[in-house]
Image (tube, rainbow, N blue to C red; front, top):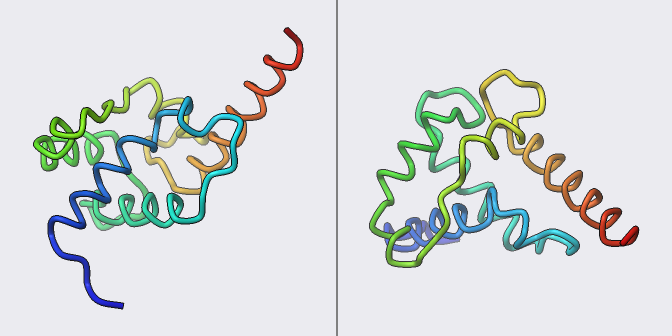
Length: 117
């Protein structure tokens, strides 16, 4: 594979912010494999402290770094509340596996809520 150009990397990060915390975009559906790859790349690109996973500070820094791309694409910014909710072990670092488990839980909760109404 060829290395990604800077603009492609920014596009991946923009997609990351569009989907990483916006459950409404994935609730009730399977997350496409390509999106999973994009989000894994975004986790890597936003990683700053040399430790696996993202801290809230790293998410905020990534938002600032890619602010223009985020603004141009009207991408919703993840809230700290979403970050805290997805950090399942409450250690202040969001791991990709935690995010996946959180999304799956949110999806199942929404399906249960929709099915009971």
